[in-house]
Picture 1 (cartoon, rainbow, N blue to C red):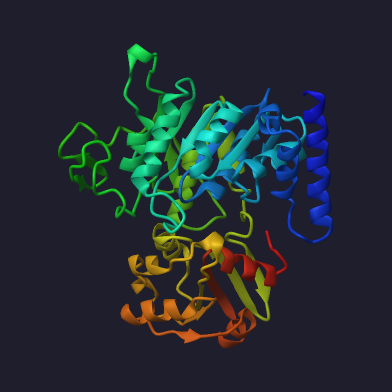
Picture 2 (cartoon, rainbow, N blue to C red):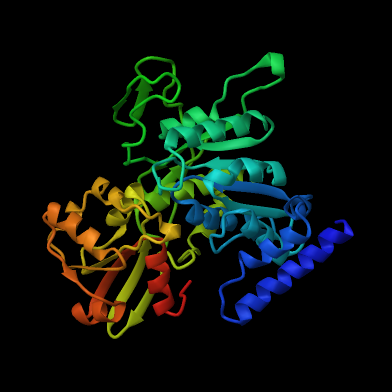
Length: 415
């Protein structure tokens, strides 16, 4: 690297280490922020010479990134932003901290994907899903799909692993060829992990007609856009690869959605030449991801942490949670989005019949929603009060972003 980049990288590592030592955080943002101030091209310099995979989407990025890192690790050391800092500052800090590695797997905030594509020139990008998320400060789903599509047009050589079950992702991943300008569609490998949330993709992004569904299939009623045939699919408790071979996947992470994340990880790793049979056993070593799915024993209660930040992810969280006492926590700080009206897009009926507790800055908003859904609840003012309010045994905790971090801090920032 140029001398300026070397200095910036060194300062980035030092700042991140000081942040961790001072107990001010994990250093995954401040190190990159300072490094980029010294050398605005630092991310590009740190990316040079590495084979890189980018993982982006509204939900599942952090978990899929961790699983992909485990799978690609068959080949050698892998740099990754394992704590979920998914903007260029986090990518810069992660690569600087890792030093020289042949591979990198980076989670990317969907709004920054185009920018990170330019800086990192990845070998492959995984597109997971698109749904509404924090609309008071984020883009609508169709706008996000358009940005992805335009970015891929500018990078036709990048290999894409994309979700065949999401019409918005399929449209974004298949920009039309334009021979006059030298644009060719990217090479796309399709995976199918099943997608239960459909409420953001009833209208075709190409022509505005209605999208119809039957079983796993979907198609536009007004243009040729339809579900492509996936090469990687989830079947029972395993994954079918493009050759038709079935691989049993034994995860320590709960829920069918994580089996889909595992299928994505295997598909991305295959783009680096990793055989599924070599990678699948490594996926079972992933136990929690930046506190997600972590289990902690306290005062006779086994507490499991689940992160849910938008309607689609709350739907999956209910599927993962055991039928046990459940604490719901909602904040509306800047990282969460300030508007909590999305709670009315969530069906809380699966919580009927269990003890439900609520807390957080916006617990009363949640109380109104639960009352409408006919779900009895108890309001508690602190996490310790919640623990005292439930009998010994399992306590499921489902929280949005800053509420999740508050509870994670109560549990000594469990990872």
